[in-house]
Length: 210
Image (cartoon, rainbow, N blue to C red; front, side, top):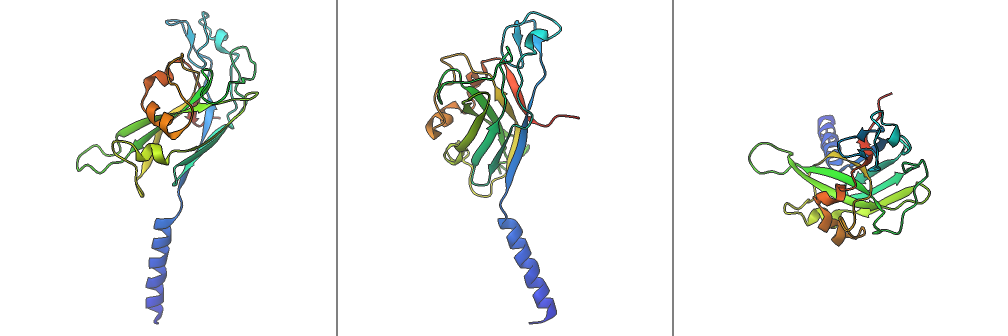
């Protein structure tokens, strides 16, 4: 085999390896600032009641900026939620998965669907995952393959997905957004705006400026 042939073969192998390389997205969930919306009398960062225009009524709650999640090419989502405090400053402990006091992790995924017309990457699905906490800490470990495979435009191998938003939301008002994290219940909650009915966003997917 000539040196040129070896070089071409090596390049082809490199391209194939790149195409098959594992992919994943990993991002932080960073705390939002105290924010009292006097129009509704509620803290936009946690859903508690407030009445002071200086936002002091909303300053008790927080969460750790080291909270994070990742989702890989197998559509398994794993995450770690840390040091979530309510508006009194106490670390939150919730009921079992599916209880009314569960917080909600919102993940907005935008599909880049081939439909022969603009715009591309515009079909967004909002997925809501229940979060249980013990002394402010919680874990996420959910396989979303069945959920995303069951969409009207099913996610299949090789499809690009863009993380376009989301965060850690306060518990919705019961009986809204029911169920645990089974694939069936997560699928039933896709794009269910009632899951955001708690009125607060403890943390946003992204990063904090220094």
